[in-house]
Length: 443
Image (cartoon, rainbow, N blue to C red):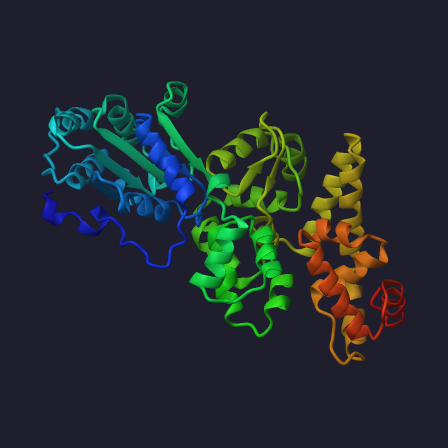
């Protein structure tokens, strides 16, 4: 196979975007890796966190020759991968003879690069497509034998089986992960109001940042949906993982690539606000949940560690909400019952009470939904589903702060829901709202 038969677009640096939000603090981290003589930069985060965009911003002003390779599923063949790797440096791919291994054939390339007078940068994008260990071995060989004038950058959705621990111990590795890639409130404001020209109030931006946890694509999808809605405040207040843009993205980019057994594990544990291996075993009937959780963590599958012992985790809020759409109400009730029993047996009463309360609430939902439908017919403007949630939590005696924590929204958003509820019910206080809700059969 010669260079003209390779797909040239996979060797081209993506064009710079004019509307990108500059991230100088992250570019500085990348520059520091070069300055310190690190051999590898790893950008590892879930889909939609701006890994490729950040690399593009960095190399746009970089005074180095850059070789770019965008990986796809067909590269799980060492011969094919090597041909593209060599072509990314402008080298004519060598034919693979039966007696020569890919490692042997990459040696001339490394020797040629070592003789070049300029500093070089090799970017391997979308490395998560690689599953073949012979390809991983080839890349490991390159990392372990790369010339001093070469720096490798790998962007991936999951940590690859490369000698990362050894390189980390030898101070040869720069790592940028999900937490660093999240948009701050200031970056989100620039993105939503300047790039997407939405003219959102600071409170609305803050709410979206909180709900998306700085997930860039989540913010973009919210912005796209906002362009089709009449009231920004109402949309932001109700924005959740069941938004069709969020669901379509997560199904297409994340969940579709998971085997059914993993998808089932994710669905069955999505009802948990925090999870550990024994708890997941109790919900799923498995006995290997610790290995599954570590696999999910390594795969950056929207799983966030809550400690350094790999014991407790939680899912990204929007990810969990999207997963729960695949469960029936009865399935959710059964899972919450299992969770409540497990937490009770382990004397974690706060969480046991939380799941027991949800069992009670969800068991009432079919009848409550009909009552709400009848009650809303007598109102000039019916209460939304989120306003019904807030009204129920008011009736249980929770403060605005406690309601905000329960629904993972800002306190100011709760206050706006309160005002909407008061206006629709024709009342002036929380006590009157609860009384009116009971008169109408909403509670």
